Image (cartoon, rainbow, N blue to C red; front, side):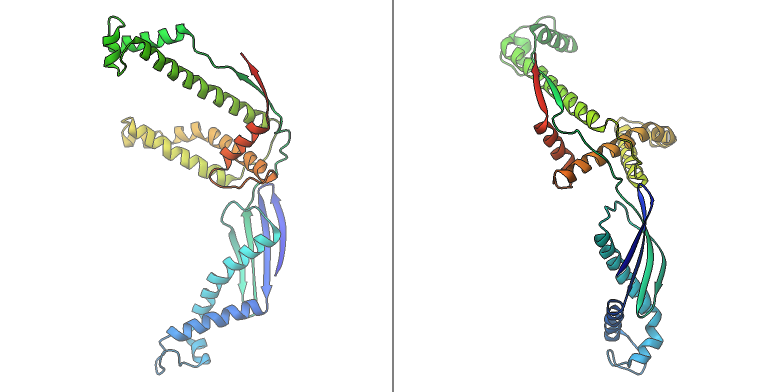
Length: 292
């Protein structure tokens, strides 16, 4: 196999592929063999028609079948050989096939090269989480107001599923603590990502941006429908929705590509759990400093 790679830009490559000899010949023989078993040729029993008769009746069909089977196989071998990180189906053109040779051109979108560095030992200022009595009181007052309760007593607490005021206060404290804990974790993770992304400029693969934009648009439409917005109103807003969500979709793709690059450098498997695994790695490797 002969492969030549030409870089079109930071996210696109053109691969010229050519194979000849036994690989092509054997594929033609394999397809003809299959056709001979199933072909219905007047005057011959299935599987008994001579090769020249099969050639006359089925040569174009065999040619098409060889293309269908051989091009994907050769393309995948070529990608493996040149070690390209392809992220979208190829655009195959200039296909030429005869009984001894196959050649074609494949334009592919690839992951851009990203010079990720300084992602280890990032400083994290962890703020110790506490809940004040005043915060608990404000939360309970808010619950009372929403329920139009005049006072706070055990009877009111039981209506909420707690035996007394003390247990309600404990439950509210736990809820506030968990909320703060989640906010602190989100703040830390966002800071780690922002610091890792600092100074990184690279072209985003358009196919990934399109895919993320459409996924976000689809989810946004579902959310609006769940809120009772009529379908025709949602469709009317589609252009505005796209303008609104495209910048965020681009940012999500950028973050994903940077995390993927870290995953490759640190031998973390690229799967559906990759972003979480990389975040856990960054948290583990960070320089933690606890502040009150």
